[in-house]
Every structure is written in structure tokens, then in C-alpha cells.
Length: 308
Image (cartoon, rainbow, N blue to C red):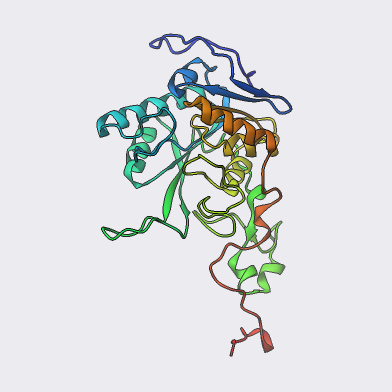
């Protein structure tokens, strides 16, 4: 792993960028927060030095993100998207994974761009939430795409046992076969590619994770799953759109080094305060099933008991 905070030469067709000093920094594990345009900061970081990237970019929905203009002409926004994607690819390591949290508007453009750049698509996951904003013009949005790419299927870091959850057969149907299987973890499974359940909803209202003056905050269990699955302790995690600071907060709680980049100095300050305070929900979120269905008790002879 390459040290943080040192600049190496960029690509031959790109000018070198001077490495800025982090606006905020913590040790054990190292956490660095940079304030500025992520494209410039990414171009100053060492090439292929980051083990995991999680990006939750502005959606161009005219949301107030401090000084950032979130209502750009479509062509300009797509060009910006390609630029920061390429900046992330420049720093992604050979074993690295790259996650992008994005709505319907731009998911296809991102998938096509990353495939054209040679990345391997591992999963097209869905983060599903139950409280979409009401509308009458079309169906209510209740999801965001969680796009999972890697440089190499074979070389990528992948820790499935760190994210196991109870299977429906074990948790809902109480299937005895799940307890007699030859699996190392009987009754457990790798999560499905649609994510929902306890603590997976949108961060709003009186949710104890909620940070004031932050928009579109992602739940901690989401980042915990991504970080545990796709990095190891001591690895370097990067978030080019730090926002409320969830990525760096969870990286620290899981003993990963991290870099966060934020355009707004005020938002970066608030995120750093959260990172210092630490994660709200600690422990393994896979302790219970995330199924929509209630547990079905077994009756006589193993048959499911019917409720009256």
C-alpha cells in the first residue's frame, strides 16, 4: 500500500497537480479530509493507491450543497461525471473496487463509461427504501442504484463471510436443512442484490443518524457492508463526495484508513465533527433477517403453523 499524502507523477497526457494539505486529519487509523474540487484532488493523489472507492455524487437535482451548483445543463453534468470517474480510476489499485451510488437519471451513462474504461461489473445492486417522495406524475422513486465495479474479478478484495445474513429458509421458514448443511456458516447467506431492512431506510426525520444541514445522507449499514466486503483492515478507502461523512466515519470504525474530499468547507467541517464523534450503529447489522416476511412458526410434523 502506498503512503497517504504523497504525490507521484500523473499520466503523461495530464499535468501534475500540487498535492494540497488536508483541511482535517486524524490518526489511528489515518483519516484525511480535503476541501476542493474532487477532480483536482484526485489528480494529485498517487496513482493506483486506493483500495476502495465509494462515490455518492450530486445528482444534479438542484439540491443546496453549499457553494456547489447542482443544477447544471445536462451535457455539462455528464462531462463532469466522466471527469470524476476517470479521476477515480487513476487512483484505484489493481485489487480495488469502485462503488457508485446513483439514481436512474445517470446510472446507464456511468455503467457504459466504466465498462469502456475496462472495469469489470460485479453487481448492479439496488438500495431500496420505503419512503419515497410523493408524486402524481409517475411512480414514486423508492430506490437508488449501487453500482459495484472492480479492476479484476480475480484480484479484487472480497470478504463474503464478513457480510453474511440469515437466509430466508433459516430465518423465515425455519428449514431444518439449513442447520445440517455442510456450509461453514449454516443458515447464513451473502446478501441479495436488493438492499433493505432494519436501519436501511432514508436518513430523515428523527433518525438518530441524521445530521442537520446535510442532504441525501446514506445509512451507516450501507457503508459498513461495502467497506467490510471490499476492503481489509488497514486498506485505504476514498470518498470523492464526502457530504455528511458516512464513508470516513464507518472506515474509521472498521479500522480502515480513509480520504474524504468535499467541495464545501462548511460541509467538510460538519462531516469532520461527525467523524470525530464516531459511528452511531456499531456491531454486525446481519444479526437479523431483512426479509419483509414475518417468521413462520413450525407446527406438528414440521408443517408451518397457520395463525388464526
